[in-house]
Image 1 (cartoon, helix red, strand yellow):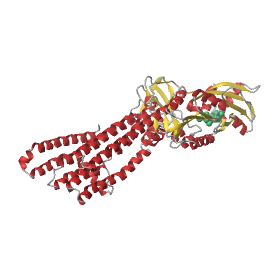
Image 2: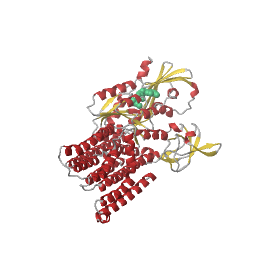
Image 3: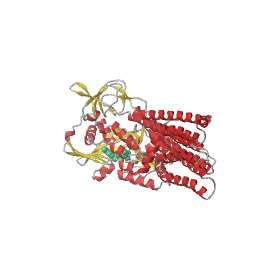
Length: 634
Ligand code: ADP
Ligand code: MG
């Protein structure tokens, strides 16, 4: 509990004690003995007024402020009117006084509000555990000395030192030192990651064993940590339909309830169906029961908890609307490279044309690929053992879904697939090996091809199996790669449908087509690494991006980001989403059900104000406790 909540709690405890004392005095008959009748009524009026004001003055002021602003209808208003009304019953001297109920309404309302504020704080904290990844400083090496600096002020290319126990403040590459990194805060994965010189480190991980020197590769603002924090902070702004519905519902509901209560209090006595005091009391009870606090708070709290729970698993959901959509996904479309496969390709074979040196083919390819971020390019460069002098390369161009072209030593080199060759009118030889084929031409002359193969991620099969088990109707794979490679991968993983040799635009079309074939209410998720597929991420109902390897564009375009690039996390995200939706609906049905019941009882004069106030606070507490289950993940 924070300071404000503690003060609030103390105020409630004092008010409860005063309330109990007043209650005791009233029941003991002492007041009657001291003040006689009707003096005792005024004495107990004064006595109950004290705890009432101690607990409720803020709510009363808030209600007054809202009325002045012309926007009166909220819970503070309902509670203020109901409790003041109960006190005002003292104006009917012939009936029992109702000050105790009036004070109780306010007191228990406060108990519920405090509990609610605590619960919200608690789920904030679980998200804040994510927030905890924010680094406070960076040790920058300047002229051989270490200076502590604000991470935001460290430039790209500077060397920082991360000691054991410290958090990596900025993304970069290890230049010196060997260590284990704890990535749990980012990925929910507890297996430590080994890093050595040359390894990339992402900010937010905790360095566990050795001292690392890291050359920063991004400014702080673009580092993983800063991007995640931004995502999490913005997540609560994107509201789910259910959430918006509840807000709109409360806006119509509260005035409607107030009017009904007024009608209930006024019409029956006007037509001579009983005493005024009786019906006014029923009207007040009606007001208390109908307070929508349980809904207004528990629904957003559930979504908040769901987002928090998912983030603990290393799944960033950018808004509650996406949780809602995820719960209804029945088609999952995967991109192949970088999503189902690791995106690191091994060179399987180099087939040069007769008289060409295989090393020459690889060297030309590696040079032409030197400016590309595509996984193929990275792998080709890794396979090439020689130095790449970027100064010798000009006019490097990437044609997405085709390949690259560049001037290497003034020679025009093309590296890519059949489509690229066809487009440039170059001849090529087919290959019987199963794999991704990179044809290479130099100045229009075919010099041979490189066969590369990517490795299926170890959890890709599990990912597809889990999705099917979760009731996903079809798993589809889209790829720009060759048909035979695509079919081989899909067969191994149990994918239902494959579309190969697609250009980025074809992928959008394929997804449009799949979307058109969706059943009503069913949703389509696209999972990709964002390389050549950012438009598809945007087009799908839910775009899921690989966070660690994915491009910035992907993380930007996606609705859900998997921090550790494991496709099996999608089924987990769906489980969290469905659990959240289940809890949201449980709360809605439960809260409305109990309210309607008590409302009916109140209208018929069976429920009194005591039942109403306990009903209201009780329902709110149960709904909040239920909502907090969303945070828990198995
Ligand atoms: P995927 O759909 O599997 O993610 P992409 O759409 O990124 O694949 O690429 C499709 C195909 O285009 C690749 O299989 C490859 O043949 C070719 N290609 C794309 N980028 C490059 C590149 N940088 N170098 C060579 N070939 C490339
Ligand atoms: Mg791709």
